[in-house]
Image 1: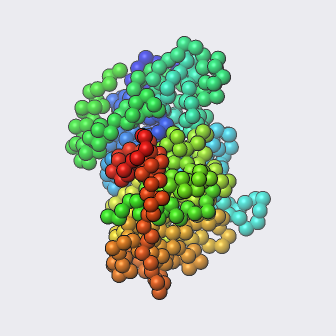
Image 2: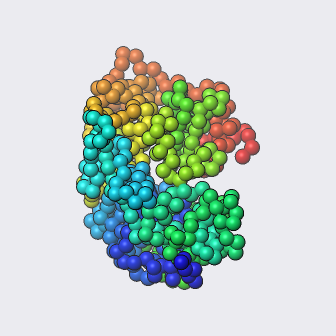
Image 3: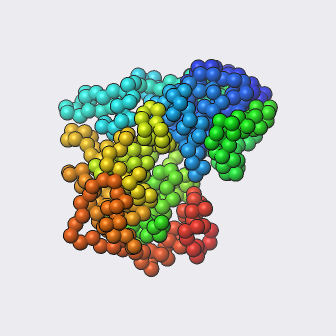
Amino acid sequence: VTELVDTTNGLARRVPDGALIAIPPDYAGVAMAATRAVVRRGARGLRLLAVPTSGLQADLLIGAGCVASLEAAAMTLGEHGAAPCFVRAQRAGTLAIKDATCPAIHAGLQAAEKGVPFMPLRGLIGTDVLRHRTDWTVIDNPFAAGDSIVVLPALRPDRALFHAAMADREGNVWIGRRRELITMAHAAEASLVTVERLVDRPLFDDPALAAGTLPALFVEAVAVAPRGAWPIGFEDLYPTDDGHIAAYARAAATPEGFARYLAEHVLDADAA
Amino acid sequence: MADPRLLIVTLARLLDGCRTVAVGALSPIPGSAALLARALSGGRLHVSVLGSRRHSDFSDGGRELFDRAGQGRIDAFFLGGGEIDGAGNINMVGTGGYPRSEVRFPGTFGAAFMAFAVPRVILFREEHTPRVLVPRVAFVSVPGTSPPGVWRRGGITALVTGCCVFGFDPARARFELRSVHPDETVASVRAATGFDFDVPALVPTTEPPGAAEIALLDGPVADAIAEVYPRFAGAVFEPTGTP
């Protein structure tokens, strides 16, 4: 049964230290309020899986010392440049990185959602991405001679963490067109979700909404967090707060500046 | 700094004959090129611009772009990179060691797949310096060519920079200078390029945008790209239409 928790702090307590946590790209509903709560609770040793890229969210968690490893196809603050804490941590060797390519992450999650051990993927042969991935391998196509193909192990996150527009009181979550959230949630053992609002009418009562609904079966807990993706934008509801992200990029350029940002915007704020 | 309109028009011409083109993240100039090519095709070219609501038609999540490419439904794709070498290898990860890189780039994104699945890969990097165009990349996110027996539908066909257009010959794994932008010469391009490349007897100047192309750029293309890249559109175009 999905639990409706009161606060993002309550949701953050369900992110276990050391867990493999799947997080969405900036355009698909980033649970930033919950991420700040994860930092406040002092999470340690998280293994982040960006599906398939991340930016501010992973950078904040890395800078705050919550992250042991990161698998991603890319890390960037977009037009605000490089993700500064990520760049520092990889250079210092304090962050284990698994460089991937976008469809490899999607394919690994698809294997997990089907309950099969691996998934083949074209491409990659001859790249240093593959060479450095000791967990990936190349096999002969069992159905055609002389055809090599990469196989990737299933990616089974302990938790998926994301933000969505609405949930009903049974814990069904409406994700609309953002189908990558469905794949993430299917693949993960359970999902932790923040939503803009709760609705009284069950989502499955409306066929137009049902098609874009993640069933409560996959959802461990939901917390209401209005503007829960801020400073990242969310669908049509609010745009990315470019001024804030630019200020983050400037602050996080040094460890001291990042510590000030953390004190001002994360440790003190959003106690809800 | 090259004229962005020249770059857009040059990239658009490289899409000639395509039925479908997809444009990835952080790509205002390739995005504008795809939208211009669509306008020039009378709407026959199918364009998907990542990040756009009105000019992309994906409804199955982030994987759909790659699934379409895997099936052969995407004819052309643009790639850039932190380093590009003379054999067409692309580095999107970093330099100065791995996994601890002295200079770290964002990452490979989907390139290690797309460059195999998409028949026509067009490289675009505005910065044309020996720092970017290197003799040998430090990390291979995308190999310029693949040996026989490795599944690959096509691959790199051209490289457009702020200075020139190179064609790419996969059989020889070499670039050949195709044209130089106005105010550039073979010598200036050679001086700014860290790798060796072929130079034909006659190297024309890159053809400037025509009146019809400029009209489309300042009209429907400006309107369309502004949805995803408002600041870029405001800086580059002189919109004539309604926003």
